[in-house]
Image 1 (spheres, rainbow, N blue to C red):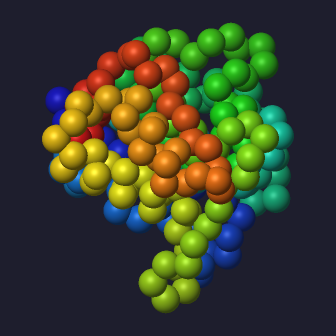
Image 2 (cartoon, rainbow, N blue to C red; image 1 turned 45 degrees about the vertical axis):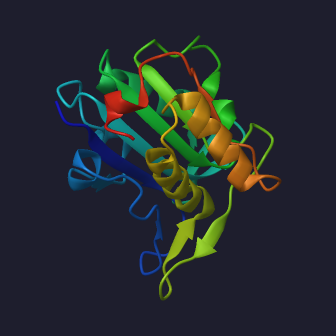
Length: 192
């Protein structure tokens, strides 16, 4: 089954100047991309596999949505409830991203999840100006470039190679990471 992509935007930007991730993915993952603004709209397990790209203003133990804190526990529970056992790649393009790997009181994420963190638990992530007044996240720009390089490199296409490429591109600004690197393969999510 083809991969679907879902962009969950929790960003306190004005509606006329949204923060976007740009065109990162190609193939089936790109053609099925939808944007949602509530975690309750995350597709269920019948959409398998799914890339869930979360753009948010991260704060310790949560994200901000329209000036209100959404706890990491609430967000993680909602994702797990909707996705159940379906294969899910979560791209956390938020400040303090890696803090979402270990959410208090929930234990480890189940084995059907792979996480790409834009930065470590103590780091911030950044924006860049896009065309016109539109802003994009720096991580989304670099993820698109890393996937493109990986696709044309002729080398093995693994989570480890993708992580290495991202870290090289973003050093010393932020340190992306992928967890776990031994579950599934990039190709499972229609990535190069």
